[in-house]
Amino acid sequence: MELDIFGKDGKSTGKKAKLSDAVFGIEPNDHAIWLDVKQHLANKRQGTAKTLEKSEVSGSTKKLHRQKGTGGSRKGSIKSPLFPGGARVFGPRPRDYHFKLNKKVKDLARRSALTYKAKDGSLKVIDALSMTAPKTSEYAALLKAFELTTRKSVLVVNAKDDNLLLSARNLQRTRVVVASELNTYDIMNANGLIIAKDAIAALEATLSK
View 1 (cartoon, one colour):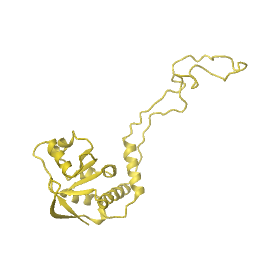
View 2 (cartoon, one colour):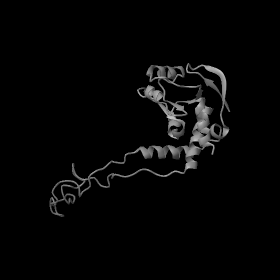
View 3 (cartoon, rainbow, N blue to C red):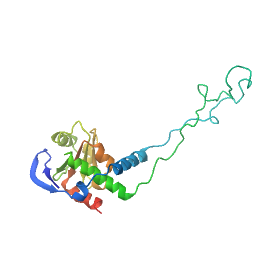
View 4 (cartoon, rainbow, N blue to C red):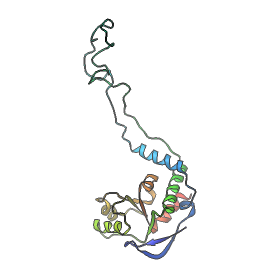
């Protein structure tokens, strides 16, 4: 598969980037994508939700009235879930939502996600991209050139670039990600995926093993 290489102005440079079909042109596996996104979101959960159960609520344990003969329901104490301020039955407790996913499944999910983006035209390859100093306006101009100002976007670079990271930090709906850290959720959640030309080899080396 070959894609046009664009400049920072959003115009084609006339050059082509060759993408490996083993990474950008496979038969997508929707279930692998679902599993990887599910794991990513589950691992981000804090799992700190907690409600008070009957033994933890403050209040008297005295029985409110006799068991039978009142015509009303049986009530053990004021801490009963029947009353406002009472306990909650089987409420949430702190827990870890993390679960394991095999590396081969995660790699398949990323290849599937990249294939979808390449097929629907949401993936763009950009020529050499660097900034001599952090400049948000310059990064905003880049997004405008690719018509992504009001849409979610991810820029994939080969190596960490502090100037790019700082330039994008104050802009909404956009992220700068190193190729080795790109995940399925980032790919599928973005309306536009911009990959630096020198980051393609890093992606293919990681995902074509």
